Image 1: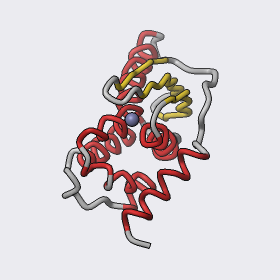
Image 2 (image 1 turned 180 degrees about the vertical axis):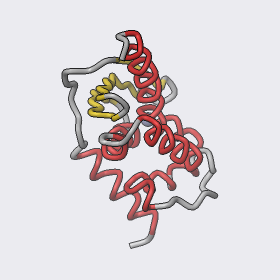
Image 3 (image 1 turned 90 degrees about the horizontal axis):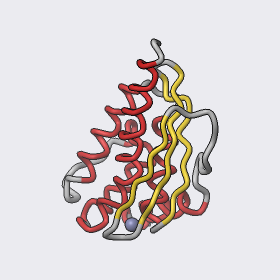
Image 4 (image 1 turned 120 degrees about the vertical axis):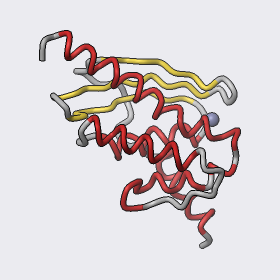
Length: 151
Ligand code: ZN
């Protein structure tokens, strides 16, 4: 199996059996993001426990890349600190904006490496980044909400 076929297989697996899909309570922030160029949409909730990302729940519609990306995001950031999650976002974004020239690190990005193939297609990069941008937005709001509560 060549590397592109393997990447496609990983993306299809996440698309068919998305990890952590569905909207759950409790949560501190909810956002709705759309990718108009492809028609992808996501509603995403973040639940923080202090500095830890306790849950990321979502309802995603659209292409297999956008939905698989939300599943991988859930795998990667739940249980990490907010700072670690933001670091992963940076790493994933660097991969996606690398036009296929960035070598992904499987130890860091796990199944996220599968999107290295997508990075060669600029039109699809927004599909892969949609859930991550929604997570970044929701997490910033959740952190702001927590500090307003005096925590
Ligand atoms: Zn898409």
